[in-house]
Length: 366
Ligand SMILES: *[C@@H]1O[C@H](CO)[C@@H](O)[C@H](O)[C@H]1NC(C)=O
Ligand SMILES: *[C@@H]1O[C@H](CO)[C@@H](O)[C@H](O)[C@H]1NC(C)=O
Image 1 (tube, helix red, strand yellow):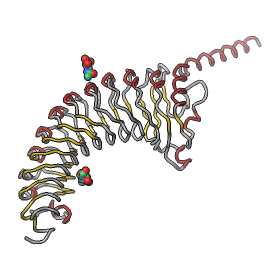
Image 2: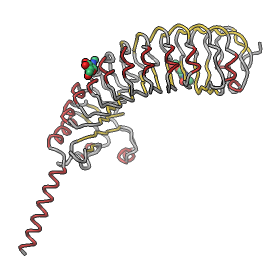
Image 3: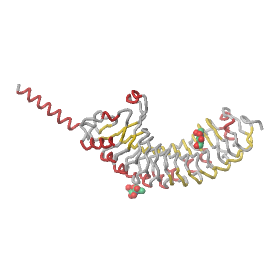
Image 4: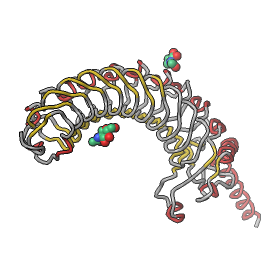
């Protein structure tokens, strides 16, 4: 009898001790509850699971580090395959703001608060004091204000995605200190001012997506120092000046979108003899001839040079390209016979219309 009681007592004690050891620290729990209090999610009830003492256990979107039991990830996506969304037959919607209380979660490694459409307010300034942050993904909300000026302190940050918000101000100089950054997505905000000259210091960067802002000034040639860069999208901004020829010398650059800016000068020859397969230079003020440098190694899924001031004829060498999926040369001042050949067989008149005097298939005969 005595022994059974002792065993029972020890077991209960062990259970109590282990549950205290395993549950999240009360300070992390308090920070999460304060974070939740600044948000309102009326349709899905994702926060209904945020009850009880152990915020590491079954709190929707929260996960903790196995060893330290500190909160490591916040992952709240408004568009998700999770059954909670299927049951409600809708995507998420949330209002409110991201509380600075989030910065008390000093072990955070990722913050994903994406596609909730209605979250406004600013990015908490203190976010740049979270030393373990690797991912910031706030895409698809209504967040305003500027990028924290000391963002560059986050030396572990690999993903910084604030696309589709209402962020304004300039790209802070300190952003170029993010030495681990691989994926930068600032698309569709209200960011103005120049691309920092020192942008080329982001040596780990593979995708730089800055389109749909009000970024002005020239494209810094130093961008070509980023030898891992595969995708550069600067379209729909107010960039002016020439296209740096060095962009055509980059090792792995495959997509280059510079469309809808105010770029001028000739198109660098290097762009046509590079590894770039998706090239959109449409809607600028580019002039001069299309360089006659195409060959069997020229491969373009997209080659859009429409809406510029290009003149001369379409170079004959272009028909020796191995593939041109989508070609648009419309709205320029080109003249002369359209070359024939396999890359051209599938193209329609719309690829060539609104030039000065182009002729031949698929336009009218010369
Ligand atoms: C970038 O980091 C260096 C070294 O850590 C620091 O001295 C410098 O002030 C930082 N630059 C900016 C603009 O934050
Ligand atoms: C190229 O950019 C223009 C202007 O932004 C856009 O309208 C067009 O659809 C783009 N071309 C392709 C093939 O995506």
